[in-house]
Structure formats: C-alpha cells, structure tokens
Length: 493
Image (cartoon, rainbow, N blue to C red; front, top):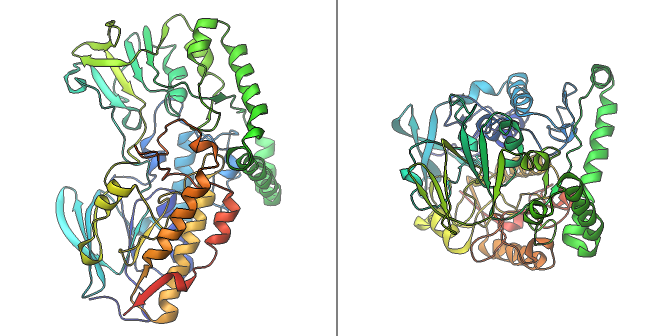
C-alpha cells in the first residue's frame, strides 16, 4: 500500500553519483529518511567511479565542480583528477550521513507503476538474486552517461586481443610495448591517449570527426592557497562565482549570436597550428564544422601526443575488425594487441536505462525510441506519475558545470515532494500538454543555436532532434526550477 497522506513517502533513488548523493542530502535536510539508494556497483561515485582511465579528470574547473553547499578547499589542481572527485563524493556521503542508505550491488532492472495502489513496483537484482521492492516515489539519478557504447563495427566480437571501453578500463592489462588501436576521439580519448602514448610501441588513433580542442589551463593549487580557502571560505566562493560567470558567457556564442564564435575559432585554429607544424597531420585534425556544434574539448597534451613518431592518426573509415586488428575502407590492415574504445555512451535512440512502465501500460523506452528522450524540465514525464529524473533529457550543457543543473533539479524535485505533502496527495503527473509545449519551445530555440548548425553529434537523435542539451543560460534553468508550478500537474489520491 502507498504511504498514507501526511506521512513520509517511501522513496527509491537509482544511482549514487552526484545526482543520487545530492538528492539524498536534500531529503535528509528536509527531515526525510524513508529512502533507499539502489546502486548496481559495489561503490558509490557513478561516472567518477567508472571512468578511471589514465588521465581521467574534469573539464570544468575544480572550484565549480562541487556542491554549492559543500565547497572543497583541498582540490590540488585547477581541473580535478578523477580520484579527487571520487574522494570528494565519498566525503559528502559520509559527512551528510547518506551512505548508510545505499544498497550496493543492487541493479534496478524494471519499474512498474500500479495505478490502483499508486505505488511503484521496482525489480532489483541484489547480488544477482531478483526481488521486488515498492516505493511511493521513484527518482532515476543514474544519468545519461552510465551505459558505455561500443562501436557498431563488423567483426568486433572476433577480435582476439584485449578489448575494452574507456569507462571499463582493464587496469590489469599491461600496455607497455604493445600495439594499440584507439577507436574514437572524444573527451575520454583525448585524455588517455597522451598518457598511454609514451608506453606503447605503436598507437593508431581512428578518428571519424576531428574535435575542436582548446588548451586546458591546468595547474597545481599550492598549499598556501588551499590553506587560505580553508580559513576563508568566502575566498573560494568568490573564485567559484568568477569561474561560473566566465563559463556562462560562452552560451552567448553558442545560442545567441553565432558571430561571437569567430574569435575563439581563430584562437583554436592558431592553437592547432602552433602544436602541429606538419600540414598534412594538421589538415586531418582540423574540424569541418562550427566550433561548439559538437562538444569542445580541453587538452594541452593531445596534439603533441598525436604528433609523436609512434602514433598514426587514421581518418579512413573502419571496414571491419578482424581477429588480429582492423581493416579500413582503403583495404589497409593494421595489427593490434589491444583495442580501446573511446566511443562514449548510449544516450539517444536507445531504451531507458531500465524498463519503466507507467500509467495505462505506457512504456518509457518505447516512447523515447520513437520520439527521442523527452521530459518536462528534464525532471518529469507525462504518463509516469511520481517518477522523477535527474540529468534527464535536455539538461546537459556544452558550456558550464553539470553540478549546477543537478542542484537545480534536486531542488525542484524536493519542491514536488513538498507539493504532494501540502495537498495531501499521493500522486502527481505532469500534464501532457505542458510537456508538449515545453519541448516544442525547446526545439524552436535549438534552431537558432550552433548545435543545429549542420554537424551531427551525440547530442542528437538520428533524426537530428537535440534531446541532450539545455539551449540557454543555466541561471534561466535555475529560475524555471526554483518552484514547482502546481498547475502544470495533475494530483491524485
């Protein structure tokens, strides 16, 4: 049975990354402890637990990549490495006493809303053993970058060497002296390629599309400055605000006036020319689309690594993978001991992370495959009462910190819970017409942005619909999610 009105709702949170931990902390601050975090792995951390490849680090400055209520004065670098971010999340879970609410090795496989009782039935595999739990509210905090995408290449399963994705790095495999092929040149690849290049005998990087790359202004944060931040937290808050504003203005070029992209484009071309003197290699590394249409990457060591004698940049399409390597469209056969896939994650044109059945038997995966992932404010979905998403559709960013967006959605979901309590209601569902109008307006805004300027990226479905990004200022998203507009919802029970 559903929890009686006026009592604490039973809440199931899926995932223990920034979104799940942030939501749990907010619930505790609301005086609620009737929740459980279901985590498929044996440790918390989400993206920052899984992406432990060599050189893994954040591409947002450290001061901005933390919860606003819990600044970290102990960052050792301007761009925090993976291990420090994971340690920070563990610190937050301990400090705010939410780790005891996590059930590890508990993979959510399906969830079904029962209209008669107004509760969610959630199927879980705990250490491989299936069982079912119930909850009044279901919060999916596992995010879009949780399912690695292996490339769809003929023969990939026939490769007899080591094969792994960057988000499932095989730390037990010794790359020293090996012939290694890297498939993909996205955010992960440009971080790990410079770290493995000095170790391997030969390295071939298979590039489908050249990324725009800007220098990564990383540097150590010395002990004196860290001590200052510990003694004077206001100093770090000022630094955080400055970084936020510096990044936020970038959306002017991406979404307001594309002419503003001319200066950074000129700078990026000059940076490439300085780092890669070879005109043939430089031509291969030069993007053929507007800066920002795909994710702009930060690296100060990728170009130098690509220019090394033991590295080959391959731009011919891959025809097939064979037992000992890769054959490209021109018929060239390259042999490898290992293949590493830096090919991103399953974001669009795929099922929901787990099977979700809403009111009237509505299937979330079917709807998202048909129309592309869609929600209202990235948080609620028509036809799925008491289901809330964090880092849902159209909440990603191409210019600023996702932690800001996560905190905005956490605050919004908390207000939804308060709305249920104020009304003494058991269920709330966003009105279908509200969701349709919201998404129609979003897609209209995209038409004027750099993200719809001609390239195709993981931001979009195969049909070109951008279902990943927020097409504007983050403070506008914060304003829209500050309070729930109850007229947007139908309440029941």
